[in-house]
Image (cartoon, rainbow, N blue to C red; front, top):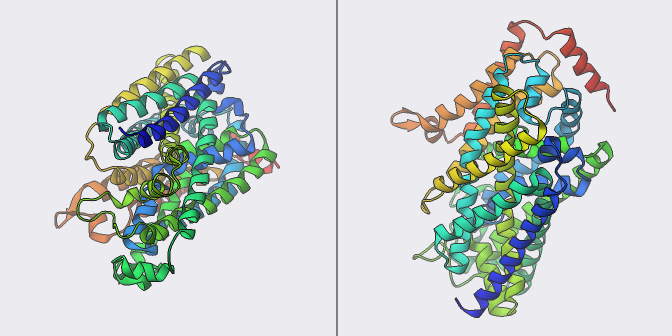
Length: 512
């Protein structure tokens, strides 16, 4: 390993050490299960906003989105548009009502516990089903994040993929195990800040270093369909987008309503005043980060000439951000430590999602399964210990799943996002805003939404193809619609909610 890579590695080491120190600090402040799972509901506006957005975007923001635009053009921006709309809706419409309702509904610490308390589910059907959904989907989601981290170290340093996988998993496990929710949120705040700084600075410097006009350079780079097609958001490579394609990409925004690792941030904010600040911070962060990520894909196509990524065995198009940093800070400006810090932004995006998923999974196992079904008399400290044990077990299982360096990451993320969004999104939304929603509707919606995604994506029933492949329609759009419809039908055709439930709903609505 040469001196430049050693300097970059030192930046990574400093960053990883900081994450562990944060875990140690908050381990000392964790006194009970509410501290471990929700930080005592004491998040301030900045930490809540940036931790929610950082845990949401993952490596997709710094690798997947710029890589897709680099390869196919600005037509790949529609997923980003859908995610932005979903983010705004989540913060403006869901966050405040969910925070109030989880406090009123017996101080619910997790999303499954909220479902149980909201619908007075004495048989704990919702608690069991939702906990299983979280464990299954987040196990795969965490594995995909660990795999992305391993590939990052392998690409930048040439370190063996499996060794890199072990290092990344160990650090995430360490601070999540020790500090719980506050450690995860504070590290995510640092990571969200680092991501945004890198996203804004790198493409701006690259743009001013371009030798000529952007459109002219794009014409020379062999982009599909030429510069006019590349810069046209209504073109998918050489052909126009279909309505189904654009609708499917926009439908990614529906998933936000059902993402437990994002929703728990809303539940943990200190007060309504801080929540209002968080909305503004989160939305501004989203505009800047998504816009900059798209800009990286466009600028990278011109800046990295004459090399075209993804051709003739060179690096994948998803490494466009990595290659830009390398060219800027090691070849031109000779500032490898600064470049290393910007590369840490990619690691930050990966870690901020993995740690949040680990914690949500741990809370589902310890609080919702262990405490509710195995040891109902367990005290707060025992629940925290079970949660920490779960973090270790899930990390090991995710490590095993991610062991194959050739495993598909994006496909797993897409299916997990669709499954969680379809199972949880409609019931979260309707439980907060429709007074008539009842237990039967909640169960029907959760089960039908999850099953629809599985059938749509995995069962070949149309000439050997899945419905997703045959129609090109994203399973989340279908699953969300089916789930919402089942909630409405079953709620209207079964017994209405009790007066106790409707009175509680009215109290939450009346809270200012």
